[in-house]
Length: 246
Image 1 (cartoon, rainbow, N blue to C red):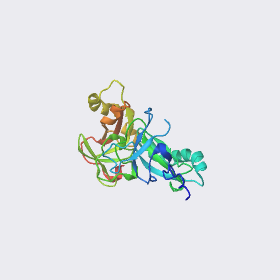
Image 2: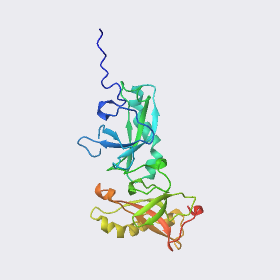
Image 3: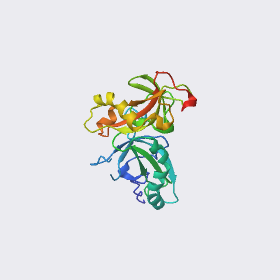
Image 4: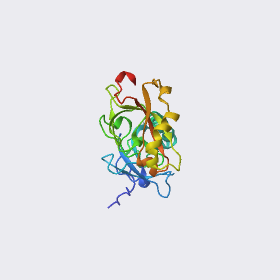
């Protein structure tokens, strides 16, 4: 009787190091374990966070690149993923592209395509990104806030993603960083001033006699040491911004 062929690794689309038994799907949120290196180098071992929130995911699958062969995927996948994710990366404060390339043995199992992740550059992103977010959803962390997002502000600690076509309280203009010696508590009082200086609403066409700079801080960027602050614009009188103002 013929010996069964050794199939170890053949059903793992991206190899034993990555460790996933099934190919990644669009919108999958992942946890990335970088053995011995935070900046997460090399290839991480990936696992899924089906909830895309409960386990503080490190990133999300945002695109795919199809290849004719595993060799082509290895050669062209990373650069192609950089290109495919450029738009979303430019709108977020602190992320990077990472290509999950299929192995020779797992090429067919991976659907002949490389999965393009957007990962937090220095820590988790904590939740879904870009078009995978739902209007009305609360932000788990400022890491998922992106330029031109419109916000429904429920309290000083609770912001929800709002439709920019509807009345909203604030809009995200960009990001700035506070000094390494600034604590999170200090940041909550200093961040508005920093945003007014570094990301002034008037530079985005907002009348300074009507609008003022706002800001959002969260634990994530203090835990990873980046001290990123999200800079917004809001009405000086506390009123809502209408859809035609964005």
